Image 1 (spheres, one colour):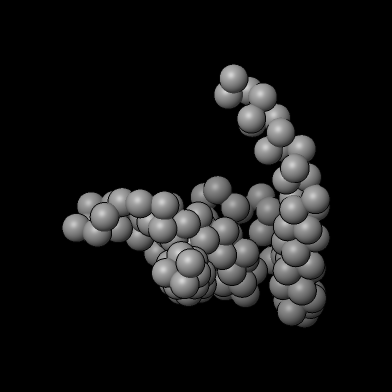
Image 2 (tube, rainbow, N blue to C red; image 1 turned 90 degrees about the vertical axis):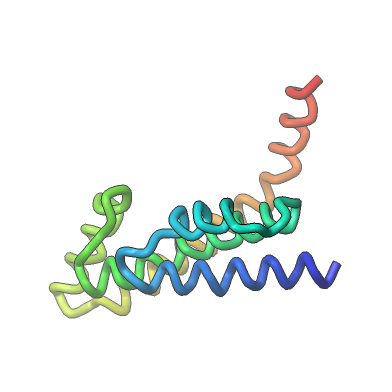
Length: 123
């Protein structure tokens, strides 16, 4: 159990690093890790998922503050960049964090519905 938590924690830390440094994407790290000699197991999948989720949250910070959005996020970041030009860059980041947390909470409440759908779909 502790090993799984450590893999998730490592994924979160890696996602934060890839999110804060423009030009490095979580998919690049996942691709490199896929071809590493590590055993591909549930823990590896947990690492990749945790890295992807934390990257998507943290990626908004340099996108808004530097005005350098990635190809897949430029439409969602442009309003934040407008806030930055008005002198409200930190407010844009706060709204992004609030939106991500709110969406995560809603996803947790919808998880039983999605789980029951997946179980019924598999039969």
